[in-house]
Length: 424
Image (cartoon, rainbow, N blue to C red; front, top):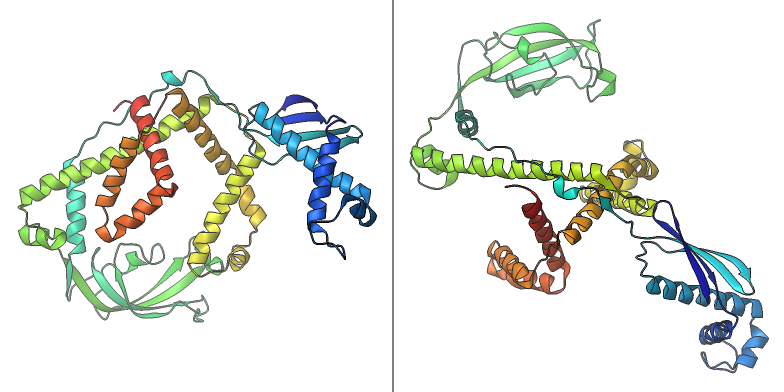
């Protein structure tokens, strides 16, 4: 057997192979045995048909074609193994000659990755500060969540809760379908209704009526209403003002289930905010590092890897849609799109995802990042501690099967990589 390997663009490899005439008898013998094992001939048990009887019932061209398939499969596999080709697709095979059997196999291989001066790529983490404003925002949200409302007879102000009747009309006075509501509740100023609508309520009192024009925005979710001018008639049925609680030990216990003084609560809250900001800053730092790595990266990604990733992304959408009880075909019809359109839309993101994976694999190898059995066990113990004991056997089973341990190992390896290459 003779062969030559030629590198092509986009991480494709072309293998030209000539199978020796001395090899073909063995492949023909294998083909004959396989066909004999499948064919049924009267008077013979399946799999026990003698060769001379088989020749009388099966066209020699069929046997030869099957022998060629075996020859291609076996010789291609031997070459790929011998040359250490990390193939990522099945080969496309073209028979050039039958005697001697000559073929060309084109296959995508794992691309070579180069990242120039990767050790010089540094990204500083943002400095973490917790301001009084940060604390106030969380405390105000807590108060807002526990706010009660009481009836008032005064004019509506921003942040009041109101109940209104309203209906929309054309300029000629005709009522517009699906624009009528009675005893409709809203917090004035939150912007739950059409932009500009709630401003017209400010200054009205219970039982007041008002008419005003509204022009719907051009990006309104109902196309028939986009940029449409409509007259609304409104009647106020109820006005309530918010009564926010004070931050005290009773509110803290109600919100957290624990007894704390106000000072203790604020200290704990400050630490929680700091932890959250630390996590956000770390994610931002890691993302910026990856973006810089991608810019310095040289790689030719096989189209098949991009296509497979785009298909995976579409399958994620399909699964999410179907978990909501919507048939994917109907979803496509409603969205006026197709699977081909979705795949095309997600191709750029799919290529970026593949490149990120390849970059991380390169960095993990060159930085010699290792995850030890002790690392894995410690992480498994942490995971089990988060669940009740009744779930521990299942977790251990998933870990032993390799399903969970692979996920944990990958996550830990990337964490170790970032800890090594990024300043704290």
